Image 1 (cartoon, chains in turn blue, orange):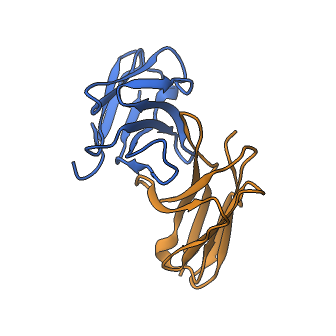
Image 2 (cartoon, rainbow over the protein chains, first blue to last red; image 1 turned 90 degrees about the vertical axis):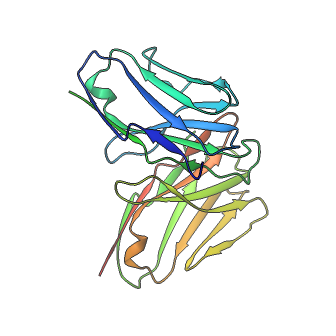
Length: 116
Length: 108
């Protein structure tokens, strides 16, 4: 696609419910990243995919968070039993060649998650 | 491990200059700079590679000193459109880490 696409753009959910956030990276980009950004804060690394595998899951805040990527393309970030502290903007980014220092990240517009 | 940026925030008048610094405790092989406007996603500005390379983008330029493990972003004759939060980013093993961020506001 022309850019990184994320859906939904906004999600309001009740505490305790599960949510799924979707990311469709730029076609041909092998690396995919998920970040979380709380209001007025920086970019917190969650997980990185190279193809379909995730060599680094260290950024996931708890075992309620999981992510997968299929076909080397679309990725889904799932949050189970949501808590109010999960409220944030979840950003997805992709890059062409993760091993190259020349390859910047391209971001989607994010999903704003509000847990009530 | 996260690069530290300074200052945390800066307010400028249109036409003034600013410098944003990014320092890392680990070796840097490249630095990328991004700008995030309020309510929007970060947008890539420029890449700096080893060798003390400097780059320019309009009136925004940057330098990279790998020995000092730091990079600086220079904004010259700032415009209202420069307002936003600036992040440096660096590639680690399996991770792409962003700096702490610098909020810049340009006033008319």
